[in-house]
Image (cartoon, rainbow, N blue to C red; front, side, top):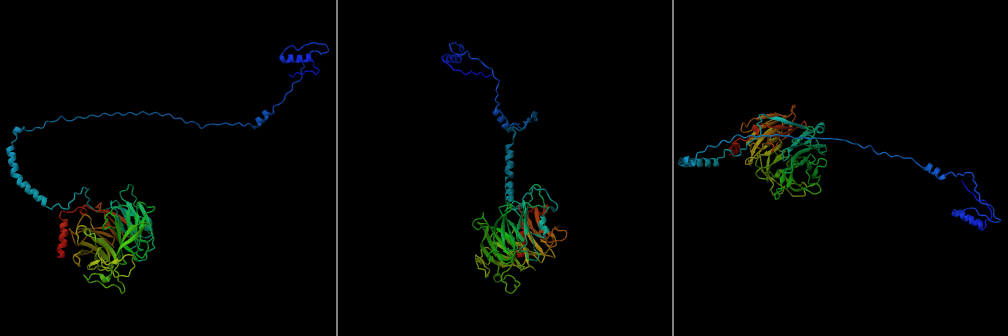
Length: 536
C-alpha cells in the first residue's frame, strides 16, 4: 500500500506536523488560514517483477554425484592345533661288570706281551703293501649294462643336414655342448651353423630344445669348455677363426674372437685346447691347431679380441727323421695338423696328429725358428722333437694316457687304433676296429686300460685291454643306418657317462656299466707292465 501526501504550502505548523509525523506525534494542528488535516489515500498495488531470479534460473544447472559402491566382506577363521606325544624307554638294564678285584690282570698282561710282536709285524706289512693303491670306493648302484640315458638334438640344425662334429663336457660334468658343422668334402666356410648346450641336471630337460643355442657364421668343427669357468666355451671354425663364448648369456654370448687377420689360421681349425699360463696358473690361454700347419696360442684381451701370444709351425724339412715318411707334394713345406693331445705329466709336452698319418711329439719350450714364410705378428717356432711310424692315412684323433706318462693312442682313416710309447717309433699295439674311418679315440679318465673309439660304421667301441687286446669288450650301436660317429667324450666328473655325436645330428649320452668305471686293484701295474714289456 502506498501513501501519498497531498501538495500544499507548509508553514511552521505544517512543518511541525510533518515533524510530528516523522517522530510519531499527533498529525493534527489547527491554525488560521491553514488547510485541514493530512489525509491518507489508498492506491492500487504496484508490483515490479524480479529480473535477477529469472537470470539465475536460466543459468542454473542441476548436478548430482554418486560414489562407487562400497564393498564389504566378512570373514572369520578359527584354528585349532592339538598334538599329543608320549615316549617310553625301556627300563635300564644294569651292566654287569666284574669288580676290579676279580679281573685277572696278570694273565691279560701276559697275553698282550705274547701277541705284541705279531701285531706290530702285521701292521708294518700292511703299511708297506700296495694292494689297495688307486682303489676308490664306488657308492653308486651297480650298473650291469651300457644304456642310453639321453638322445639330444637341435631340429633346425638337423634340417640343414648338419653333423655333430665335436662334443665337450663342462667342468661340473652337468652340461654337454656340441658343435654342428660338416666333415665331408665341400667348402663350408660360409655355412651358418650352431653351437648347442644342454644342462642334464635341469628339471624338465627337453632333449630337442637346448639350454643355450649360439649361431656361428661358419661350420663349427671343435669345442672345448674352460677348465674352471663352467660357462666359457672355446670353438674353432671351418673359416679358420677361433672364438670364445659365455654360454650363460645366450642373448649375447661372444666374449672374444680372433677375427680374420694375418695371424688367423688360413685353413679349418680342427681342435682347440685350454692351457694354463706358465707363470699364472689361474689364467688360461686357448691353443688351436689347423691344417695350415700352424699351432697358435691365443690370449683374451679387451674389446672382445683374441690376441696371438705364441706360435709354432710344423715344417716338413724340420721333422726329425726317426722314421721313414712319405714325401709331401712339390712346393709344400707345412704339414697339416688335425689333432692335438697334451701330456698329463708334462704340461709342455704334446702330440700332434697330421694329415700325413704320422704322430709327432712336440714341446712348447722349443726355441728353433720355423722355416716358413707364413705371415705372423710373433715369431713362429718349430716344435717337433720326434716322429712316429705312420698310419695308412690321415690321423683324426690322438689321446694321451692320464695314467702313464709315455703312452698315447691315435686313430685315423685307415680304421686302426695305434698304442704308442713316447720312447719308440713303432706302435706297441695296432688294432683294426673298422673297415671305414675312425674319427675319435679317448682314454677313460678312471680306468687305466680302457679306451673308446668312434667308427665310420656307426659304432662306439669300448676296449678293456685287461680283458682283450684284440677285440672290443662292448660295441654300442649309435646310429641305426650306420651313419658315422664323429666324436665322443668321457665325463671326468660323472665318470659313468659317455657322450657321442654322429652324422645324423644327434648326441647320445650313454651310461656305462660298472665294469668300465671301477678300477681293479692291479690295473695301473698292468698298464706299466704292458708299456715296459713291448718297449724293451
